[in-house]
Amino acid sequence: MRLRWRKFVNALMLSSSGLCAVIAVSALFVILAFLLFNGGKSLDWSFFTQLPKATGEEGGGLANAIVGSLQIVAIASLIGIPIGFIAGVYLSEFDDKNFASVVRYTADLLNGIPSIIVGILAWGLVVLPMRHFSALAGSVALAVMLIPIVTRQTEQFLREVPMSLREGSLALGASKWKMIATVVVPAGSKGVLTGMILGVARIAGESAPLLFTAFNNQFWGGINEPTASLPVMIYYRAISPYDDWHRQAWAAGLVLITLVLVANIAARLVLARGVSVPRG
Amino acid sequence: MASTAAAQRLNTKSAAQTGDTIARLVALIFAALVLLIVVILVFKLWTDSAAARHKFGWGFLSSTVWNPVTEEFGALPFIYGTVITSLVALIISIPLGVGAAIFLSELAPAGLSNALTFMVELLAAFPSVIYGLLALLALVPLMRSYVEPFLKTTLGFLPFFRGPAFGLGYLTAAVVLAIMTFPFIISVSRESLLAVPREQREAALALGATKWETTWDIVVPYAKLGIYGSVFLGLARALGETMAVTMVIGNSPEIRASLLAPGNTIASVIAAEFGEATGVHVATLIELGLVLFCLTIIINAMARLLILATTSKGSKRP
Image (cartoon, rainbow over all chains, first blue to last red; front, side):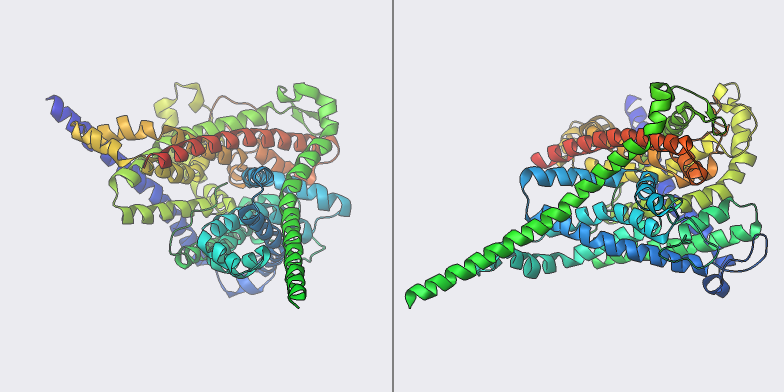
């Protein structure tokens, strides 16, 4: 009797844990299905080529937001990747115990800060002195988010380069920086590049830090002007009362999620062993 | 002859050393930049919120007034909204996440487990505005027409499920946050469950425990610090989540007992009002940012300590 009860509990709890896993994974497919269905319905050529129409008018596209996103993310990468990469090299290769652990801790801390607060920082540093919104301010915000991701990923993958390679090149008479530049970094480059791609994919989807830095624009932006971006456009289109704008939000959502999926799956394929998602 | 060769060697050696010193210095400067960013961030949050801190003092944290016209501001409705949505989200996502993590670490074969974990981790990589889009255009109508009326008829005797069902409010925000946090809980909990030594399981099974008893009484307690860590990690994400919450919480600066009522959180009020704010209003929103900053730092630090404690424990006993 007792044994039967225990077996019953065993079966019940194990199958409910399986059910939990099914629910968790199906969340992914439900989200993708919604985006594919609604986004696919509204995605057409003009979405990529036309500017938004005036409020309430049917049609038009989000070409400016696509270009704006590319612009903002490109500048953010130009600022963030070199800083993050070299800081990562420092953490992995010049480990002065105390200072390195302080930097490591601050990088993690910066990684965990809500993105809206990074927006406040960029607003105070760029928008306030310039007195207007600009793509540059958005790029600064995204760069601040990108730096700790790239730093930690670079460090992680350089640390995986076997010590024997380092010792070998030092034994051949290479100086330390030559060893880093010609042996360690090339050996870890696959992982480091993957980390960078994942980091860029992550900031490309950010909208909170852009709300009051790059802001939004119905026309083409510029480095020194308010600039539209896909995530911010999705926000404003989704909260609008117009059905036609909702269609555009779905289409933009589909484009954005395709980008994120491609980057993540490519990263997984490039690395033989799995790299886990950078954790906030 | 020999001495010049030696001198040359000495020269190249010192050149290499200078190169190393320069490389080290450059790397050090870039690493210090990371530190500098955080210092500037804290400094800016502190100085830019000075006007609000001087005007309202500590009473800011306990005041419930929010009136941009008369410039009277209090943080309590937003702190309440942030805490309540995060807690309800965790009530949903902890059982779901830990349950799924148990399945992935104890039952599923390694190949399946890795594939499913990758899919779950993809959820963590989705931009939050995508969650907001789906929540606003798909989940809100569902909550308004089915879930909330159902909760009112079945659990309406509780104060949490009263009032009109708008679809926008604490509960919808909490559901979205639950979906956004369980990938973290699953991924980290699974890792700490996998770090439990095999002998622990074998010993329990050999004593006649069922698979579930082994898991629940032996494996889960062994990994509990890591699981707590995963929960704190999820909590930190939920507290700071902005876009998805802003889009579905209803943006109303009041404290309501009912989970069906519209409210607001710290992050979402900053997102919604910062662009149009002027004067003390700006400083107030920045002070709210400072409050959120402190909250997430504390929660993140606790998460990291707990996760560190388990992973080092697991690796010490192979």
